[in-house]
Image 1: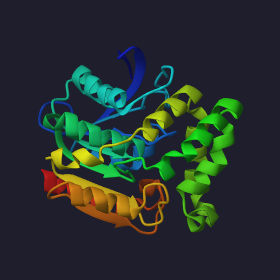
Image 2 (image 1 turned 90 degrees about the horizontal axis):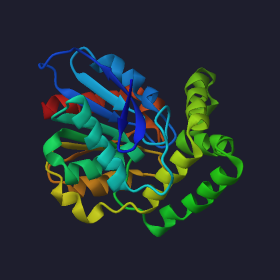
Image 3 (image 1 turned 120 degrees about the vertical axis):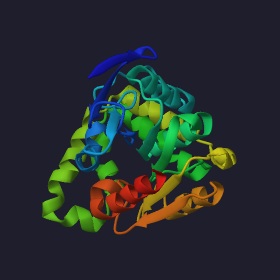
Length: 267
């Protein structure tokens, strides 16, 4: 489905039972992916929850606006979509860019959330982490998204996972999503990541929160999830092993078990 919000056309999907009885879940994708990264989770949850997922600005089938973007813009997109669809409150689940957007939603609009799961995320862009985005943005602008496909896959999954022939369909699907991301969407969201700084405000998050990351994630390593757990009272931290950055696709069994337990606890 498509809807005009905040000046652009958004793609979104709704699954699960209609009516007012089922609680809402909202899924938010990582950089250079789309709603389909959550297919496995949606298939297991749609009998009990009403599920809203969307392609982030400039990703999948959602239109790109010119860069730069900010997390204020991305958070605003979440709230606008919730308002348009009629979602008063939801369990928010995001990975990487989606998880970091979730931090902003929980800080600025905590009254709209039932819980937060920020997966393979971090609260702050230190200079060492922000610097590589300059070259990645330049490469996308000069040579297009194809130039980012293999370097991204190499960073996102462990070597062991990449070597197993049975995992080829997962990796090929990720490659397809990267290729289909617009350059404007990539550079806009990458620019937002460079300005990430929710660390000083983590204590404002008051909803039940889970911070989860792959044990081998080099971009948002376990210490980032532990730092967020330390900053958010009553929150939980889970390290998925083995897994790297896209932990729900690399180790869905452990990822889903921890996520579903979090949802049950949050009510």
